[in-house]
Image 1 (cartoon, helix red, strand yellow):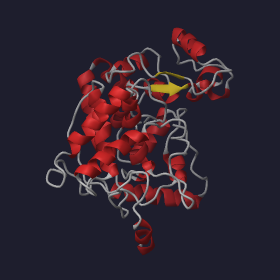
Image 2: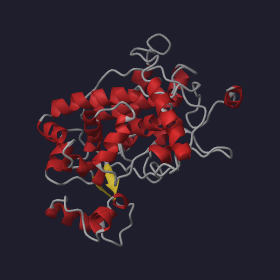
Image 3: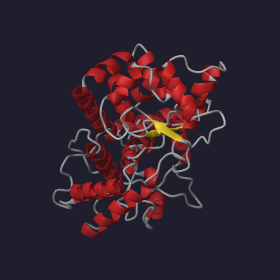
Length: 353
């Protein structure tokens, strides 16, 4: 996700992750649906390409340069940063809430189930923001940095490039609970994922294409132990895993393994390509939430299509990233000077609303 699901990246994309179920009460369900509605109602407002063409004309160049520097220093940072867009936008819209550090009065998203021991390379955004503040103080939002940097991570790993719409504001706060309530688990099946994405006006095709972010990166053994040893409480492995691949995973993740050990998400983990979909067709998907896209009749046609049409995958991925980047909560925001901390005046703003 997209990680859509949160996972660790490799020597270098979008990831998926563990989550808590929504509280099983009518009241909490009501408020959660109101929250989702508020995001979709604000969909795409006030965003446009070339947003900083006058106020900070070198903004996108500065971000691309920062991502190149990060890649040369630690290639796996590309995969890490690319996943930020999913983990940010699905919680309270694309507002950089995931970058806020905890405070005595606020538990943010960094230690949520989707992000703890999974997301990394926050310092890459810090370094880019520092350079942007030197060039254009108080102009470029951290939320827009995430969108630009995610795009650049794809392009720098051999994937497509595209124009991004900008003009977002940064949130004034963050919520660990909000992240836990929304982000999907590596155990998720296609039916659950389809329903989740539909709540954000994202189609089945968008879901499958965005899952292709797992074309690069690595996942933790933690995320697949149940697949290998107790799928659906059976005490047996997931029968969808191709036998020789299952043996590889047994060696990588024996029952007594350090569950932070990582394995490749597909056979070409440093290159953004359509190998991920070829692997799903062959029963070699690393996560349950990946392989389910082939075993489910509703998502399988898109997996097969993308496995033989890389350009078609690229086009669909771009469409999905742009649609996901349009998600906004409509709440008040600001341009943070430091992506980890709300501006000093933020508490006054919060008191006003």
